Length: 287
Image (cartoon, rainbow, N blue to C red; front, side, top):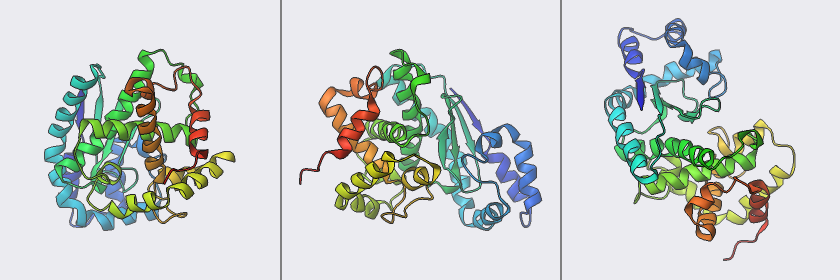
């Protein structure tokens, strides 16, 4: 495990300026060029409007950023040790801790499935919230590592499709609950204390949400649908973004109940996971 903590470099830059400018941010990006090559534009659009918005928001988040810079490295170490104890995998992870421009708050790169980015400017500074989001991202790596250990041919995986994302996000959330147990249900999806209405919306509209997702995947999947179901910029259908995470977690939890944990998490080895999800989505909820 390695931890590349770039947050202090942002704080040094922030503290040295009376007022941040676009030029200051561009210099920060240049000094951390390799990191921001992974961040822009896939995980955050790099536009003048976006950067100016970020400059306006940093003041309100700077104290949280300072706190997270001090606590997150030890949290990452602790959570990774829990994973090693539970799953007995040598993941050899690289964690990149950074301050972004209010895009994605965490992600694993597709070309290097052992490299985790945590962009902290949108995160809660509470320890348990940070533990959950770290566990979620390591959960992705663990999910992929279990499949690799069983010989999954990665060329058969259709990355970027809604059914694949539903399975991977559901698996990561399931694993995060196992590694950081006992928290309010909504924390596993929003990584803060404000998610109860979001989970309530899902529970009260579950059948309709399943039908709407099924209708979307029946047609060509595109970035508009990806944003609606799995990105922070969605929420046009039901008023809450990333409802696909809750669908995915429900799917994986029922699969674990039916098959057992290891078989469920490696279900895409030798099975048509997409067809199975479609069948599950089409099944009526029992009230």
